[in-house]
Length: 188
Image (cartoon, rainbow, N blue to C red; front, side, top):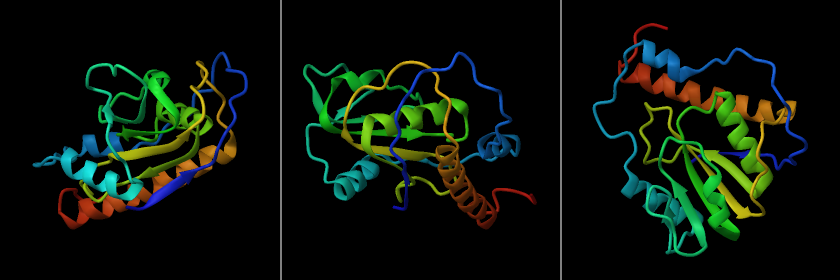
C-alpha cells in the first residue's frame, strides 16, 4: 500500500468565497468513457484486514455508517462516499480516522483533506491493495487526533495544493495504465 503524506496545516480565518478554478478530474473523464467495473471495487472485509495489519488497529472500531457510538471511540472508519468531519467530535484524543475518498480533485475534497491535516498530526492518502486498481477510490488515513477542525471554507496554500496535485497525478496515471491494460478504455 503506497501512501502520500500530507503536510500538517494550521487553519486561519475562513474566507467568504474562493476563486473558481477549473477542476480536472479523471473520474468525470472515465464516466464519459462508459467504463464500468463488473466486480466489487472495494472489498471492505479484506480492506479491514489490510488496515488492521498496516496501522495496528484494534477493536473497538466504529464504522460511521453504523449507529452513533455510546461513548468516545479511538478508531473511526467512514466507508461512505460522503466527505464529512462531523463525527470527529466522538473521536478520542490521539485517535485514528480513516475515510473513503472517491475523487480527490474536487474543491470539497481539497477542503476535507486540508481540514484533516489541521486536525491530526499525521495524514496520508493511500490506495490499499484490496481496492480495485481500475477505480479512482483511495483512502485517507489520519492518525494522532488533535482537535475538531473549525467550520468554514479556507484558502488552500500553494504547497498543500501541490502535494494533492502530485498524488492525483500519480494515482491517475496508475489508474489509466490499469484501464489500458484491461482494455477497459479506448485510445486516449
